[in-house]
Image (cartoon, rainbow, N blue to C red; front, side, top):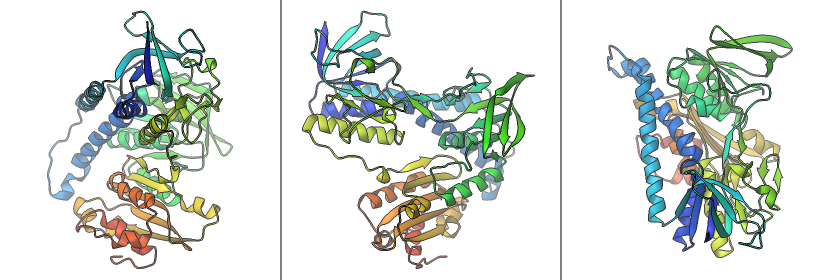
Length: 475
């Protein structure tokens, strides 16, 4: 028997379940189809578990290396990685239960199984009926929605010629489940995921080498930020090799170690490690969901949508990683809310990616919003730039974390903020204020006029804003 809904959401990750909650709030009869667990990649295989491990790495680093600087003598520091993993999983389970509770609160029906979009059928003259192959083996459910939201997310991208076995060659999903830390690790890819894993495992005492195809790590970040992160990682013992073209055909396993060669400026170098971790991006989950039964267009692996998040099938929407762009949980959530608003009201506001904060939870942390300095110059802006170091901020000295800075880029003609870039302690928290400033078209002067508490790390924003016009007080 078919079940009718106003909205069926295919995928229960962050974007999907947030969209479902909003739909229920607006009085729409709503269902989610999820083949694994509600919360998706972010909760179970990405944001939350990786940040839990990074927090344990931070505590271990402070206890093992910096506690004595605070006058705290710790005679013996032991890493119990099984307890690190147990803590991570406990956090995930607590949040998972919270998501399930929210579904019950919103009276949202959850179908645990694999959903597939059908073409026109006896249930509907338009494509969009969803057949759900239930995980429990029961007969398929048929859901007939007025609107569909595709939120199937993404998975780690592989590399041609290199087989991921989960033991010697891992992706981030496998790495999160490691029971024993390797002594050495080769990370392929110097993007956000690669840098976070490098920072974490370095703190845990693993010897890490990053092999990056491009000329630098973190290609999307401001050049000054990249320079600082590179310096700090190398200072902690991470080896970073750029302009390296990996040669998968040379990969081999000998004596329980992995070996692979790379071409470095026409010279061959052989790399050896206990394990190899692939961090070369993510690809959309578009296979097996029935897109061939619709007019939905897919380009370069991603579903194509309008500003309203409608696909070519106007009653079918797509959000999150499956449409590409910035593959971030908070972006997926925002897109989900926007799609539901359009379904309910016929209007919505497109997301401006220049107003989206990006965070890297390594040590040091990185956070940014808007244009990099190079990008702003390439777009023809005349710039004025303010930069202020954490070493001149009292709270940073108190905390014992003084590396890094905040950089504000403004339009010399209009004084509008074009970009804010941060590297240093707790900048993934500080970026929230920068995000609000960017949304409200604030100027550096307006940031500097907001009274900030002393002592606080937030003062770095005031000083960097003042520095845009060469008026910084404490440096």
